Length: 248
Image (cartoon, rainbow, N blue to C red; front, side, top):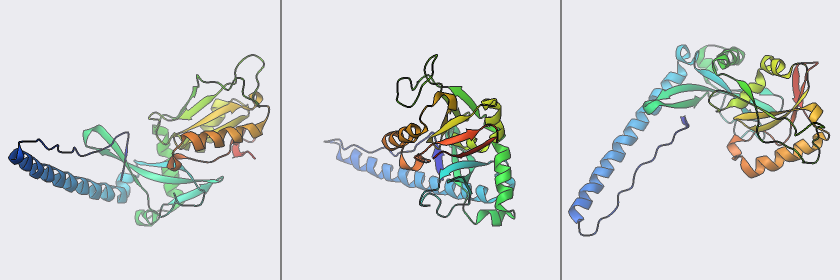
């Protein structure tokens, strides 16, 4: 089970010189606290796994995660469907103590346990996306002055697509209806910032598409953790066809 926007750590006991007995009692208490915390964590993990296997619960709590396909190491053991040169994986969301939220990744055997096909599971996950508040926001930063980008009346325009929480928001790429409404009949280049967000740039602001791939690769290698990377190249939204394709 993974936790979102949260972490858990155990405190370390400090030895106090001249307080040997108190120190030893503290050590025993620390061991006991850690033991109970571990037991609680194990119980929570078992409960989470049980909920993830229950389709009645998972039906309303399963969501898509856009994932790098690459060499497949981040897809091992997971249920997924290919899209472009990426993959759609899935996660069941859970509420954790303390107001935290966790996810359980959907393993490749779970659709069978659910008694449904992967396509049916995908359809339900896509429907649940509607509850996530996907939206576009104008970026404050610009690409003004970078070779390959030009706009006669000012800096290059950039828009971020993500969801309400900012977690796993790159899945918005799957919602072509949302993209079409945003694009308003215009073509866009799409930069895969990470699994959490995408950056849209009007095609009219880009002079050399090859510069986009260079920018994506350099930025991804320098600033994005490997597990959160999507790809090292850009994508293109064709407004006439209302579809996204690989831009190479």
